[in-house]
Image (cartoon, rainbow, N blue to C red; front, top):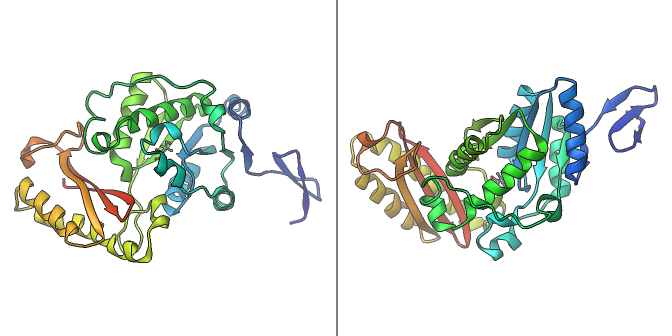
Length: 301
Ligand code: PAF
């Protein structure tokens, strides 16, 4: 179709029709202005916060948001406050042009790509109390990580004012923390959990997968394979037996090293020792494939 871009918000065809196109802005002022306009028109707003390096997992969240909302906002921001390892922050993939090219055909209305200064005009000194949800598993191995996640997500919610916000269950602990943050801060946003999207061979999709060497990528298949096998095993083995099986099987692959595998109550996230200790049970794992840290999980009931 031939036409002209008018300002940065509209595409005007030569016959004069105006078609809204994907708007990309980097200040919270612009986001708030648009969101307020949309709210005044009675639109509901779906929001997918991301750190970029988008893959099919993210796009699935965006597609769902598009189906369930009148307007969809995606943020792309590599949040420094959630990285406890500066090297990890430095190496985190940044692929903005490719990300925008993936989002545009989906029908996203607005992409917010803030600078650090736009999100944190002053250092965020808030310390959240997540009642132990953040003290186990990822939280125990990445001190301060979830506090940083809560800082950025709460700021983004203040700016985007979403009706619905979409989060993947691969980051299961993050999802529970965001539910708690949302409750504590009294946001009216509905948090929508979305199931894990996997590669054809079972590896949970992650922006970190693109940094795996060919050998580590093959080895990493063992993570989801072992978790799936542990689900069958759980039917007639104790928690200790299942935990030992998972750790030994994955560590037997020379390129992989389990950092932790914990079977926990899926609501409180506290580790359990008997299957009957929790109404819903989850196994969460973190594995190093070389220096790339991968996480995954399995629900047992
Ligand atoms: O899951 C992520 O990508 C990030 O933790 C999030 C929620 C976008 C906050 O930076």
